[in-house]
Image (cartoon, rainbow, N blue to C red):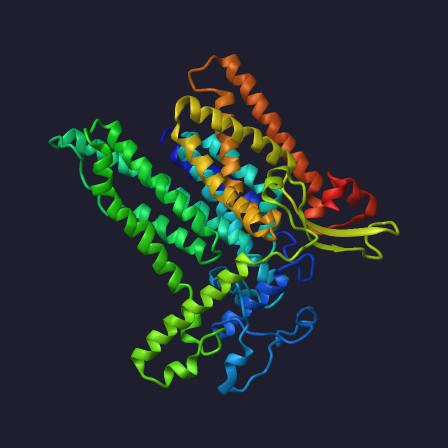
Length: 505
C-alpha cells in the first residue's frame, strides 16, 4: 500500500467522525415510533428480556411514548408459548437493536443507537476498502465521504430497521474477501519464488480473512435472508479470483488446482462458518420456552435426545412457515416500488410525516423523515456503474467486476420476486447496493483524475470534475437534510424538496 500509514487510518477516521456527527445529532428526533420501528424496536426489547419475541398489548406504541416499557401481553408461566410473537426475520439485527435499548432505555434514541453505530462503522470500512482497491488514501476518503452524505444510508442509520445491519455485514464480508484476495496472491508469489514448480500450485492454508468473511456473511443472513444472495455471489467471485491468481503465476493447470486446493477450504469458510453463525444467532429461541413454535413443554418432557431432535424439527418447521410468508407477501402498500425503479429513486418511503401546529414560523408546518437517496449520488452512481460495465468488458479489471457482482447480488434477485410472486417491496431494500454504487463512483473518479504519471493538466481537470461532483452531492444532501431528519419546516419548503411530486408525496 503506497502513501502514509498514518493518513491511511487518520483520513478514514476523520471522515467516519464527520458521518458520526451527522448521525448522532438529534438521533432521538422524531420522538415517535417510525414506520417498521413498531415491529423491530419491540421485538428487540423482547429478545433482551425474554430471549424470544413476544406479543404486545394493544396501543403498545402509545405506551412507549408515555415512557412505559411494560407493553407485553400477560401469560401464566406454564403458558408462555401463548404469548409468542410470530416474526418473519432472523433475530441478529434485533439483538443488535436491543443492545442500544439496554444501554439507553426503551426510547427512540435507545432503539436507534445500534443502527447509527453500524452506519458509522460502515463509513470507516468503505473508506479503508476503497483505499485498498484504488491504492489511494484520497479516493478512499472520497468513498467514505459520499457514503456519509448518502440520504438512504443516512436515514436508515437513524432508524431502527434491519436493513442497515444487513448492509453492514455484507460490506464487511466483501471487504474481508478483498483483503483475502491480496493475501492469497502474496502467498502465491512467495511460493513461486521459493518453491519447486508444480502443475496445481500450493494449498494456501485456512485463510483467516476468508473465515472472517464467512462469519460476516453468515451474520448478514442472520439479519435478513436476502443476505444469502451475497453469500452465493461472493463465494463464486472468490473462487474465480483464486483461479485467476493461479493462472497469473503461470501454473499449467490453474483451474483444477483451484478445485483441489482452494474449493475445500472455501466450502468451510463460506459454507460451514456462515451456517454456524446463522444457527448461533437463534440461541435465544432455542433456550427460551416463549419462542414461536418452540414446543418447549413437549420437548423437555421426553428426555435429552428427544429435546434436541424436537427442537431442530420445530426450528425447521418455523423456517418453512417464514418461507411461505415471504414468497406469498403481495399485500399492496402505498409506498411499495418495483426494483427497476430503485436506481431512479422514483418511490421513496415516508418513514414519518406530521403537520405540527407551531415551530416553523407560519401556520402550515411539516415534519418528515423521507427514506430516499441523495439524487446527485444515485444518478451519478448509475452513470458510474455503466462505466464499470464498459471498463470490465474492455480490460477485465477485477475491481470493476467485483463492484458489479456486489451491486447485482443486491438488485437482480428482486426482479424474480417482482415477476414470479408480485411481492411487496420497498426502496430501502436497495441499501446493500449502496456501498457498491459508491465504489463504482470512486473507481470512476480515479479514472477521471488519471494515474500519477498522467499530464498535470489532465489531473487538474479531472480533480476539478470530481471536486465539483462532490460539492454538488454535499449541496444536494444539505438541501434534503430537513426532510431526512424530521426538522419542522414550512409546508412550502417541504413541498419544494419533493423532486418527483407523484412519487415522493
